[in-house]
Length: 344
Image (tube, rainbow, N blue to C red):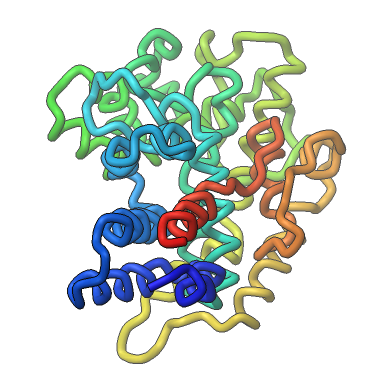
């Protein structure tokens, strides 16, 4: 087996098919050393494409020394509560670059359901992405206790967090102090809620007056002192990026995932449905705000999209929420290039 027989599959990013062909060649007695490594790379590429993020650290360690391994490890959620490499808890930028790449590759593979699933996942941690520039990390439970306080996680009636968010806030303060099982449970069930809680803290009445910006949910009338640190300009910028994140979380493209359970032969969204949902989403995202502060319309951070971006403007949205340019990465394609070189 040579590179020419695999290249069409690699060009289409069909890494599962590549792995199957390599496995068949190995079982048929083909020269094994390079093919075994190429098969391992193809399996790794498939797992990365599937956004199997809790195992990214394990995959990266299996290919230590590869030019993409450190980048993959940076996109991983740590398995251990006090693991030195904080990965996506330290910064969400590598994971979002990877998700943008996955979105484009899923579109290239003509997989509409996976496009919708990935678009939904992009919304999952957008509030933490917005807060990262203020916190210095992406809501890492190991560091969060030194930055939040006062009513956070308490039953103080002055706090607008509901009971579920209060419980999540308490867990966020303690998740990295316990064992691996408790930490994993926190990441699985509560970490995204931490972002919802932080969003309410950002949208406080000491920063934004009534009617200045779109009303997109619960706000905080009496903010804690930690939530109003920094200049008013910095806080207004954070509020704007958080509101944009929440508009996306409540958008038609994300709702399409909830309406596509895929069962009893129904539920797979069509390309037309996805396009319509994205156009409606973009209308909401790019609508002018009363105070003119919509981050997508202020210029400056515009994203770094691929020429044929699956959902035009997604890179700009992620960049606007982050407050810095984030475009689709090249990590999966780098693994594909390694497969090609190994069998060449």
